[in-house]
Amino acid sequence: MADELNYVRNYLDIYKRRYIGKFEYQIDVAEVMLPCRMQKMVLQPLVENCLKHGFENMKTGGCIQITGRRDGDDCLFEVQDNGKGIAAAKLLQLREELDTADQTEVEGIGLFNVHQRIVMEYGLGYGIRAIESQEGAYTVMILKT
Figure 1 (cartoon, rainbow, N blue to C red):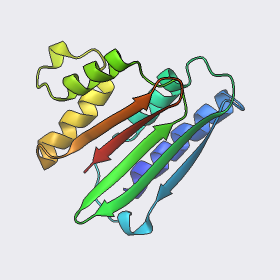
Figure 2 (cartoon, rainbow, N blue to C red):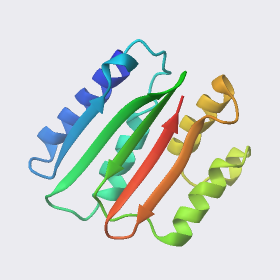
Figure 3 (cartoon, rainbow, N blue to C red):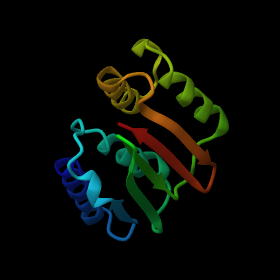
Figure 4 (cartoon, helix red, strand yellow):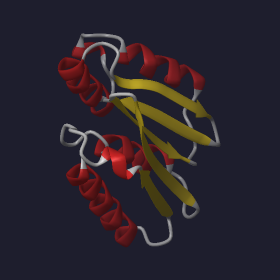
């Protein structure tokens, strides 16, 4: 887990240097989670969606918050941004795509890939458990491993 968090932190630092003043980020993951086992490249696609889609037309003021906590034996992560949000129809489509096993029906591969890799390792109750969004305000993705 520590490696994944360092990778995401480095990824965000590179983007901060490239887009000076566009966004800030916070990572708040409980220390008790650091020994948890986590697949590689699970958080990065979620963060990338914040940067590419959430902050698409923003020049400044973006914020990404990554939080992590234990829930019994499970690890829960939230990746939240204050970007443009997701239109209701698109949000419904994303949720439906996460429930499909057919990759040919999926528009965006990043979220689906992360979700499917986690489900294959941990089972159906895991992966991207929720996507919440309000257009013009925020998007939150909750990941369970």
